[in-house]
Structures are given as structure tokens and as C-alpha cells.
Amino acid sequence: MLERDRLGTLALASILAFALSFTPGEPAKAQGFFNGGTFAPQRYRARELRRGPSAPPFGFWWGGSPQPQRPPEDIYVSSPKYYTYTADAPAEVSLAPLAETRVATSGPIGAGLADNRFAAARSELESFSLRVLPEVGSALIAHYQRYPDYLWVEGDHVNSRAYAALAALQRADRFALAPGDYALELPKGRAAPAGHGGGPDSLIRFELAFSARVLTYILDANRGRIDPNRLSGYHDFERKKIDLAARLVELAAAGDAGAYLDAQSPDNAPFRALRDKLETLRAAATPERIEIAEGTFLRPGGASPELANIVAAIRLTGSDALLATHRATLDAYDGGGAYGEDLVALVKSFQREKGLAVDGVVGQNTIRAMVPESNGDRIAKIELAMERLRWLPRDLGPRHVFINQPAFMATYTETGKEPLSMRIVVGQKSNQTYFFADKIEKVEYNPYWGVPRSIIVNEMLPQLYQDPSYLDRTGYEVTTATGQRVSSTMVDWGGVASKQVPINVRQPPGGGNALGRVKIMFPNAHAIYMHDTPQKHLFERDSRAFSHGCVRLQKPREMAAAVLGKSVDYVDQRIAEGRNASEEVTADIPVYVAYFTAWPEPDGEVQFHDDMYGRDAHLIRAIEATSAVRHADS
Image 1 (cartoon, one colour):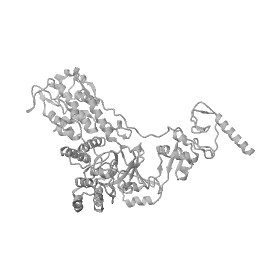
Image 2 (tube, helix red, strand yellow):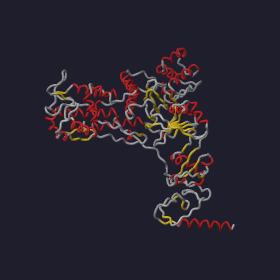
Image 3 (cartoon, rainbow, N blue to C red):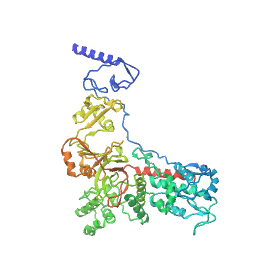
Image 4 (spheres, rainbow, N blue to C red):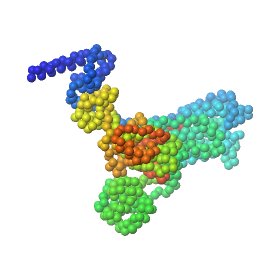
């Protein structure tokens, strides 16, 4: 007993001597130690520190397992935020620099200044300004300094090119843009092309104002009205840069100014399908709508007074093929509430047709498919989809992967081949999947799972405080920043939480690995990739937002084979080798981790989806804010 007390006293003295070897000064390499039982990172200057070759790395416990220690309660790795949108604000741009133009430029516009009405009128611009987006103002000055001549005026009237462009601006809503953003009163006065009234008091001012409207349209049609990165931290796009001055030169050379402006919007297959559906919905009469009582939930063999409305809704929204297949059941139904086998078969066919879980249970998702949104709601979703599509490249690529989070679907597309589509699991609302584009680089077989810091801090630490051996027992590998393997019982987890101690945690390959047997990588700042999963049962759900942000694939081997240009058997063989290995994807295959609540399926039919993360509302508010600043003086 006395011997044990003596040893304890010596140990305490050693700890005190170690602590006294530091004085305030430079940051110590020993940050991350517990001081007096409580983690207290400070600044020290080491007088002398000798460590044996077997000493654990700094930030770890010395000799044995510690008592669980908690960091401050407010340490938490938070998710990205949604922002209050700040719209691109127009500014007063003086056009006085154009009044000083002296040098004519030969080229596709005009014939020089010898008899140039523009040159004669340019003094009117000395005190003229326009309220325009700054990049529009810069492009106007750059263009007209180089080409000091009219685009929209001929003689003393507005020319036919202007009327063709005006018609395009007025049909901007066809492309989900707002015609009012580009509206401009035509000049009044003396002369105009046949069928149109007079000319302006100041043709040169009309010229510049109309070019500003055209350039604003070109900007919006190419890149969208909204900067997505100002919507939230979940959006990650480099906003497109448009050479507006060059576009005016192209417009001057175009045979049809209206067609040129129409072509500024994307012309890929998804955009065309959305545009056509938008036109169809706008032209359609308000469709009949069947109401099913909120909270209705009906299992096979059960009964419900809402069954009559359920059958009526299927009659209204089911395909002709489905109705023909179940014609006898529909004709025999007497309006009762008993949910028997024939009606269950009818509902299952409807669920299969809509891509739902085929279980015959009439719940929230099935009812939502039976009672579609109003035309107005669907029109709004298409308009938002067309805005979002402008953030992506005009050409999605001959080979690409498109992940649509609200649809819970991923599709690999390759020219000349049938698309490969599959169900996916994406991030839950508290761990949302980002919206960005990248390029697929690698396929990894039998992958390790490097546990993100957010999961370590937010989810694993509470377990580690109760059981420091938790990671060791469950097969995880814990390593220092230099790769040294350590026991989870040795780690100062409070230091990890407060970023004072760098620690890596990973799960080795195996049947229980969170990434399954294959991972498809496109390295990005958000640590998002596609992968297999041992939790196959989740693919049977209709709503599949369960991950921490990565994309789990229903058919990971097929997707890996597609991007590699190999067979599924080849992928299976690589997995069967049992070792962790990777293979480069040599083809140029972009991947779009996207968010569209309206999107055309591979067959071209536009489908509508729930706004699972509430992002539509944020985009609507951003568009409204943009409209408000553009029309602040009107």
C-alpha cells in the first residue's frame, strides 16, 4: 500500500515537472494534451522536451486509457447554410465615353464615319446614362467605341433587325424568362418600316437603350438570372462568363436577329423537352382534379371511404395501357370501401407505372402520384428547371452521368446506347447532397471508407465518450496525420473535436463497409461520390433521402462498368480479388449532381418531383428579388 502511494506521488511529481517545462510563448507542438483533466489548448514555449522512441504522438494519452472527456458543448460540425439572396443590381452607367469616339473601325458593322449619322449624333451621349447591369454597360461602351455605328436604326427609322429582335424579347417567356425585363418603348415620330409608326426624337439614345435590353437578354438566356452560389452553401458553380461585346458583333452579322436571340438559350434535349412541356401546360385547360382526404392510408385487405376517390384518381391519371389492362376491375367496381385483391392489383400496376414501391399500400407518395399538382404548380417547377439548366454546360456531353436528387435517380447516357438508369439514395435533409458538376476520374474496388470529420464529431464522439474503445472494437482504423496507427483509446477526442488534434478514421474493406464493394470517384471539395451500399433495402423506399450526402447506387457494378467501358463481369472479377485497388477512368465523362423538381425521363416525358430540400422556394425568392431590383425605378 505504501509502495503504491509512493509510486503515485512520483507519477504526480513527473506530471508537474513536465507541465512546468513550458512557459508562455510560441505555440507548442504538444497542443492537444489534457491539462489538469480538462482540455485547455494554450500557447507555450518548450524549454526542453525529450521523448522516447515509443512515446505516443502529441495529442494522445500517455500510458493507458483515459477517462472519457467531452469538448465544449457547442463544438459541432454544422451543415452549409441557405442565404438571403443578393440580386445583381443595375447601376447608372454613363455613356459619355462614346461621345468622344473619334476613330472609325472597318468591319462587319457600318461603313465608317465619313457620312455616319451615329458619329453626327454622338454628342447627345455626353449627358446620357442608362441603368443597366455593370457588365452590360461595359460591353456597350466597348462595342460602340470599336464600331461607332447603328445596329437598330436605318436612315431616320428603326430597322427590320430591331423589330425581329423585339419580337424575340417579347416571347422570352417561352424560354422561362420575363419579357418585362427587356421591354422598351419604340421611338415615336417620323418614319419607320412599312406597317410601323414613326421615329424617335433621339435615335442614338434608342440605339444604346435597345442594345442594353438585348445584352441583358443574352446574359440571362446563357447563364440564368440567378447566381446559384448566392442561394446556399450547397450550390457550387463557376458562373458562366459571356463576352457580350462579341455577341453584338455576331448579332450584327446574323441574318435573323430573332432566331439568333432564341438560340441563346440552351438547345440540348432536356431543355427542349422542358420548353415543349411548358408550352403544352400553358395552353391546356385546367385539368379535372380528384381530392383524396389528407392522411388517407390504406393497406391491402383493408377498407376506406376514400377508396372511391382513389379509383377515380387512377381513372384520371393512369395511362391508357393501364386502364385497358384493368378494364374489368374498373367496370366492376361498385364504389364500396373494401380494398380487395383486384383493386390491389390495380394500385400495384399504377405504382409500377409511376416508379413507386409496388406494395399495394396507398400512402402519401402513391396519393401524390394519383392527385398531381395543379398546372400552375407544374409550370412553376418547369420554369425553375429551365433556370437551373442554364447553370450547367449547354452540351452535357456524349457520355455523362446525371444524378437528379428529387427523383432519387441516376442515369448514365452514351450516344448510341440505351441509357442506364437506377435508383439512388441521397443525403437526408440535415446532410443534403450538394448541387454541382464534376468529372469522373476513378473507380475503386473494395474501398476503404474515410470517415468525414462531420460524422466523427457529430455522431461518433458521443459513443467514444462513453466507450473509448468503440472504434477499435468495431474494426475502424485510427491514424495520425502522418499515417501512424493508434488505438482509439489513446486519442484525445476533445482535441479532435476542436481541431487541435488531426486524426483520420477509416473503415477497412469488407462486407460491412459503408461503401460496399465499389466506389466511383469525382474528387470534389464536398467529399461526395457514388458508391455501393450494404443497405440494399433502402432502394425499395419511394423517398430515399438517408445518406450523409454521398450517392448510393442501386446498380453500382453496372455504373462502374459503364464509365470504365468494361463489362459487369470484369468489374465483378476485380471485386472478387478481394483487395483494395483502383482504376482510372480514361474517358471524358462529366457527372452532374443536380436538383430538378421537373425533369424529362430518358423517354422524354417530363416528370415532377417533391421539393425534398425546399430549394424551389429559395430560387423563387431569388428570382423575385432580381425582378425587384431591375424594376426599382419603374
